Length: 141
Image (tube, rainbow, N blue to C red; front, side, top):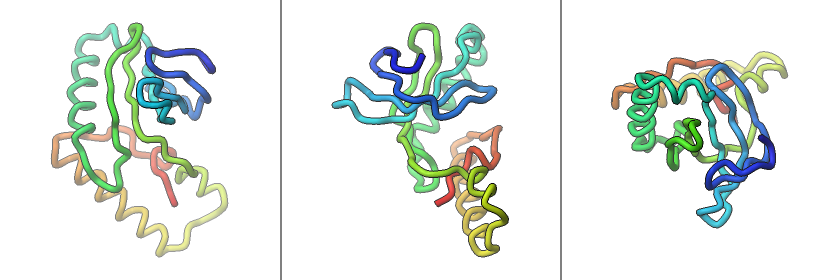
């Protein structure tokens, strides 16, 4: 899909792939070519009415979150039978990549844990459960 259009988006670079789909660096052609991260879920998930309904409900709640430890969601929906989430692109390394350099200093580890806890608390307050908390889903600055 690299370099191809996806609805209003131009997919530029595959950033990651997992069980719940792919994350792409993309250009949003409707917002002056703003660079975004777009998560595209596997096609079969859009065919599952229960999953699609839960996805929309949770994406809507997540899009309303305003917390410095949560990546903002711009929009979400379905394009060509594929569910997607358009979110702010955060440059940098995730915690899994940082850990390849060796153990963290205790004070840095505590700061990261505090920020993850604050993000999860904000999500839980609006009824969201992350379901996939792991180092590769945490950005560490």
